[in-house]
Image (cartoon, rainbow, N blue to C red; front, top):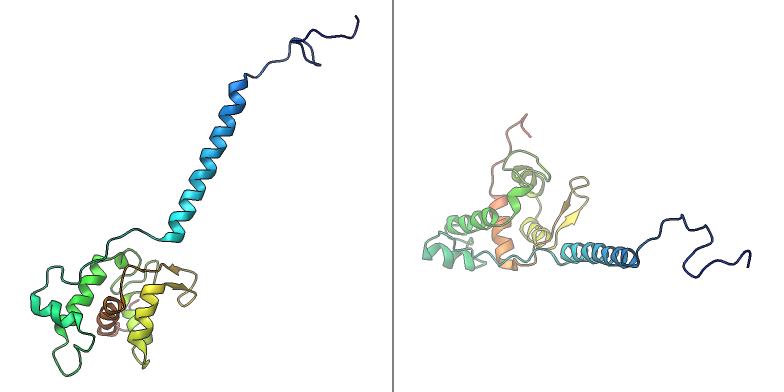
Length: 173
């Protein structure tokens, strides 16, 4: 009987600490929760924020809403209401988290964007698509998130407002 161990003993002897069985299950459950949490965060990032569309009429008179809804509103008429609608959309969305009016934050300032793209023939369409689809690499390593909750007319209003901004003063950025 020398060399045989009782059924509850292990190879290292009786003085080795025993792990409770529930500890193994607790570790498995913990790791599953961590994996699900990481998956959930990744899924939310890929889907984008669940933001309700911002109405372009926020605080604007009925005439401004009608003018802003018309994509041809700036042709031969006062474009002021359409620009106000674009400004309201910019202020109502998350644009100001990354862009300053004159100052470069995470992304370029609105005036820098206007200055760079103002001479392009397709500037409004290009910027409207960038607003909706996002992008990276144009202004360094910062990534602009997409805004799929905005329709084409809303993003065109935002682009029109952006392009209407005055050029930055020399020496300021």
